[in-house]
Length: 462
Ligand SMILES: *Cc1c(COP(=O)(O)O)cnc(C)c1O
Image (cartoon, protein in one colour):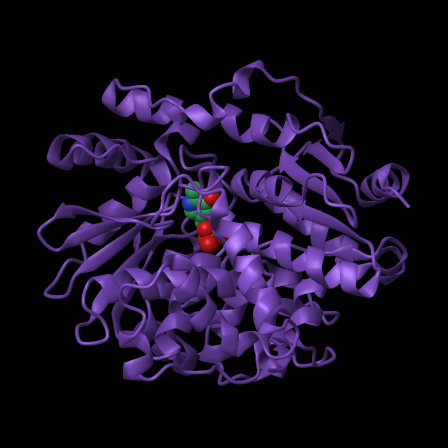
């Protein structure tokens, strides 16, 4: 299985190389050269399997010979062993034709654990085999960082640096990043927004001298292995609702477009998905693009669903690559225009493709709060604000086929917003009840490339 860049100019890589590299050297994102499919019988055969067995069958065709069957099976087993629910991704029913896919039973209580826990295991196998060491630098709006730190803490061949926007993550998110005591964990609070964190990270990847000197590796949602791990739960949930004999729709709370792009891959692999609905908060660049045809940056407005406070949606580049008929030159041109002018117009043909592939909706802050309160009253479920954005948009798209809304985080990760909406303060699961008693360790950093690179050079082990 070979991986190509969305901008068409970077070396073609194997799964293992694409995973360790993250961002392509032409600034693009790696995607599989061809997308493998599962036939109807293979999909039907996933029914009743453990999450781990289904994960192996769904992901195996993308991995090629980067890992042996045994290595891959054992990485999957270890990745999900620490989850707090035997089903890993259980479905809960909200209303007659509406289901909630709970993706928050991992160690940091958000869906990011599904991919990050697996990547941690796969990195360890690959690095030990090659005797290599890497420096992982990640940017986070809150959940990626905690999931990455949880996955890589204490590993021998890895230093992990996480940039998060100072003062713009929830206390639970911050503490999950600042309380691990392992020497290879470095939490950096940047003076700026998440988009600033992500931009500085991209700058580091584009500074090849630095990139090569520290062995820079990326685990942001642009990493193909992350997208792949997220494809699995589309299959497990759809199959338990009757696929492939019955169609299923999904609504996905979206910021960086990683999770919903995984849904698109599931559809391309043969899963009968009727609708894939993008749900955004007030930072609605994706909804605006789908409705107006212009992809145009606005300023980020902090919201009560902070993990989606994003106005540069990295993985959307993968969708554009498909929408433009896999023309890397066209995508590179759009991205240059984005950099120069802060936006671009999507061609008519590409808009048609996007409109056929995705639907979208946008939810205000008041509507998010109302969604949390309404769902509590209707079904008893306590939603985190991100999941509440999804549920609100899903309700506008309900139809004859079952709708699955992805619940991306546990309500206890955002207790203030949930309490304000319902009067109920959700408690942390017992396994992390001492989070508020642990000592924090964090470095405040300026929004400045040279200063950040100096810190990485100085702190990493050699
Ligand atoms: C990361 C995150 C999102 C957005 O996911 P993307 O796939 O990056 O768009 C939504 N909700 C929560 C809780 C998250 O942590």
